[in-house]
Length: 256
Image 1 (cartoon, helix red, strand yellow):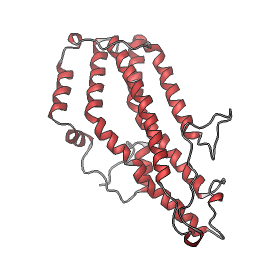
Image 2 (spheres, rainbow, N blue to C red; image 1 turned 135 degrees about the horizontal axis):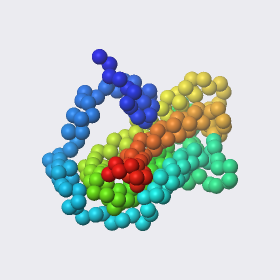
Image 3 (tube, rainbow, N blue to C red; image 1 turned 180 degrees about the horizontal axis):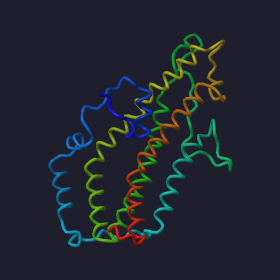
Image 4 (tube, helix red, strand yellow; image 1 turned 120 degrees about the horizontal axis):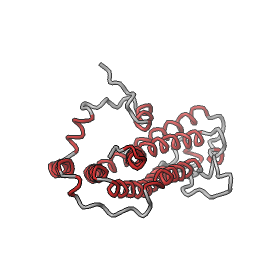
């Protein structure tokens, strides 16, 4: 029986569209998580779950209060989204701000005599990795602040913060490895867009035309933005959950 895909993130759906030959995972989420955690990780999680919430030393209080974290989350989301959208080539900031991470304009590696050679993907690999580093820096800081606010709010909030910290430590290396593979997989889209361009080309293959609206590079730029925005949405899910829990608790719902 085919697995349902309604629970997949937008990032996984986009990658699946580009790589339909990738097989479905053999294990469900719980089984895979068990394979990712070692004995030390399991002991840490057991300790957090089994400890009395009131017995643990509170984490340092966040510099910002819990009340401004939802607004901070929205600012981080907006800033990272705008950095992705403002590529500096096919879309620019209406206020004239320079892009933080400009979209590369390639030069064909081929000479006129060997124009079938595709352009180099390396600048686009670096471009994608630069956005990933920016996401990691901003979201990690926000996630730490959310945990600090939760830990200072209540014993149950402190336990939730401890669980999140334990999972982050246990899964950080695997997450980094998996996300680093995204731009590598995305190189196939780059190759496909260029191949379609070459197949439809009439006349000279002039790299100067690649930056024009409607070009193959414009289509690829849009593909990159869709993938980056989907990754941003995925990366923000955990911190969004922490902020939602914090908002519920501090709103007097007595959830914690």
